Amino acid sequence: MKKFFVAQITIILIFAGGLSGIFLYTDVYENVQSRIVNVLCLSCLKLEPKTSIDFVFDTANGKPHPEFVIENLTIGPVFLHFSEDVCHGCEVMHPVIEKFFNISFEKTDSVYEIKNIQGTSVVYFYINIDHTTPELRNSLYIYDKDNVQGLPMFSMISLGYDKGIVKPYFTSVYGTLKDTDQERLDVFSSILQEGIEIYEQNIDGFLKLRI
Image (cartoon, rainbow, N blue to C red; front, top):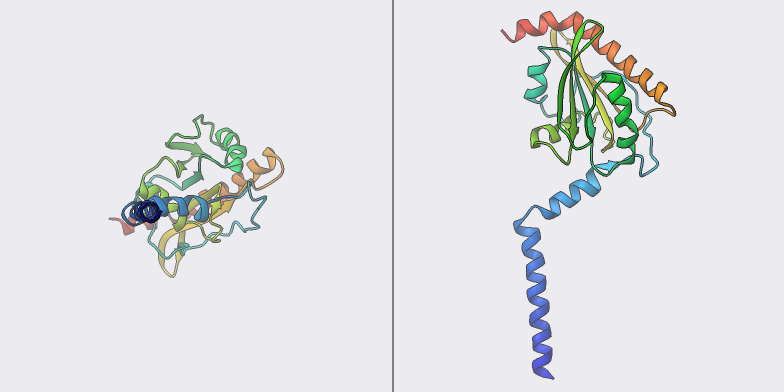
């Protein structure tokens, strides 16, 4: 009996040590926490954040704008579309975005397109956080201006004039936005129109800063 008890204790200790090793020496816990806690499917939670489309200068987490955004701002306003594999709201918005940008792609793809809208080049990125690079994934937290920490999320980065300096000026909206696809298209049209207008007003000043 005593030997059996000792054997049970040994097995438990080995099992506990194995779990400890997983959490200490791999990023399993970090990945699980990030996927389940930090990035939630807004539609799955029946949540539609009430956020404004006001443009702001300060990033959500105080970090600088990513280099891939800065470089593409020399081409045109940048539109970031964030999604993930398991997200009903992302599936609702996928065909809306495809129609809006006249583009077709799979949910797991990575997409970079330059689209001509109202005579201005708009740089479109589709970022599925389950199938992307760390830099692109981390931009989700940079542009989460309302600290929603949920998907889908759409960010429009343009240019604004702030205290004598031209710099990135952005807004983000979340969830499925409205009740119908046409209403959703209208929201995106409004955001892009404003983004394009202020971009055209400030692009010359931005390019001078980069010379």
